[in-house]
Image (cartoon, rainbow, N blue to C red):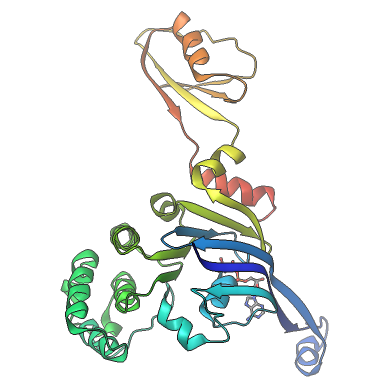
Length: 329
Ligand SMILES: Nc1ncnc2c1ncn2[C@@H]1O[C@H](COP(=O)(O)OP(=O)(O)OP(=O)(O)O)[C@@H](O)[C@H]1O
């Protein structure tokens, strides 16, 4: 069952028209003329309870604007949006009870308080049952490794520690949906791994629905079963990661390593591009045209090998290609 419904969603921003030339800056300030920027341009999607959705797109695609409408910070220009049965901008407070929000660059924690106290206050604010509170805090401390900095004022925490604290605070009241906007931006590999492990456990064990925007495609590959790609405020792809790869990347690569002393003599199959390196030979082919088994048989007919591998396209390359073909990269 859908927990988030978005249909024909549009968001326009009005900006004062910039006037170029001498005194342009001053005239921009006093003029009443404005231009309209359509940040979200007719988006439709439904998210089911328990999904882990990656909401991706190049800079300025409209990701944050969509998230802000789902969290109730922004009111849509037109279209419909419903989050757990609530229209977010109309009932922002009630919506807030169902959702957790973590923006990588902004913290919702109290700067002067240590995390332990912040979590106590949140427990009181949301009237969380003490036993549940304790169980959740213990779970978060373990999964997010909060212990080393649990009693340090938030202002003294590193970015990675602070984001982990923010995640614990957002999830303490057990919201059904978690919105994340670039949660791993600027973090080191260890902090990223901690956060990914936490999000994955949360989704798997607590059944939390997660909507994640990120430019880090390792996050996506590790976590998201479904991705929505947007560009220029419109959905350009909605489906799973594997189908995205096969839809946008026709080519696969077969990498073969030759036994010592064996010379590469070629396979002579039309449509196969051969590139010979020091260590291995790479054969690029289109799996719709040529079967892998056929290619391997052709290679083995003339060569002795020590290794053979099919290289799957990396999401990083695929998405980069999509952005580039839209003139965005
Ligand atoms: N408050 C605002 N006023 C005017 N224009 C805005 C405002 N917020 C966003 N925009 C414009 O709307 C478009 C979409 O912005 P948005 O922040 O949603 O993109 P994004 O996909 O989140 O990008 P990024 O990956 O860079 O965070 C951009 O062109 C942006 O300049």
